Image (cartoon, rainbow, N blue to C red; front, top):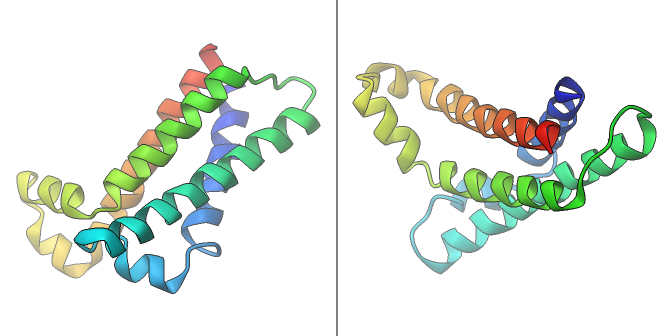
Length: 132
């Protein structure tokens, strides 16, 4: 069940991060102030919606997949909150400084670290759901 849950959440993540993320959200989700937080939270909300839809579709279509509603709600809040935090960009930059990866950061590495952090959050959400 973990694998099914993870795949569903990952597909929801990919949809929210790529085809459903607006240019405005991508450009401003890390900005300071109200406009930045607004873009960031709208983008995180898209993640909650797409991952929720993926879980609902999976629960409806896959006979062996049962999802606890309280666990699903907690997992979706976790996904939205961690996505909003990671997408402020300073956590990834801080990690890359700590890991002494500034050169890689200047050559596109931050996008890979960003996606790895998001996938880790999805793995934890899928583990929570599988254990519930």
